[in-house]
Length: 125
Image 1 (cartoon, helix red, strand yellow):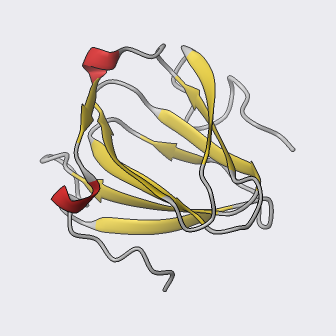
Image 2 (cartoon, rainbow, N blue to C red):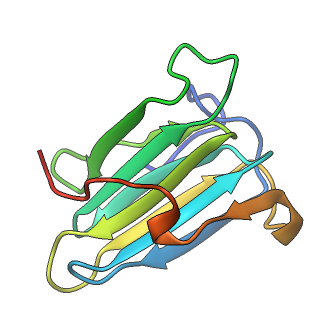
Image 3 (cartoon, one colour):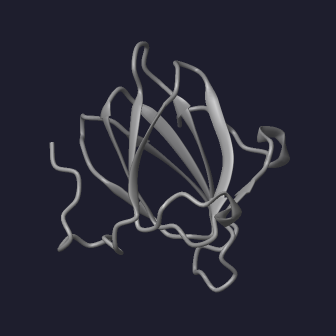
């Protein structure tokens, strides 16, 4: 499986690669990166991502989107800064999320909310 090349659309520099796991039915939400561009893929398992666009100058301002990442079909999703997101594990076993980020982790760069601070339907449509 291919992750990302420096010549790919969505590549915006390299800061770090990090991995996260989420158990079946578990939800991890909400985070917003002020500077970081995410390049997400799920090489193992199946994960539902939900995004809420808070960029006031965006065509999709205040719209939310659901995307499932998994090996089938396998693809990378680029997420610019300014978007709230969370994710939910959909498979038993390992659900592995990979993020190739353009900046290194910086706690002051992240905003967080509790899961109930953004009302969202976590079902698969």
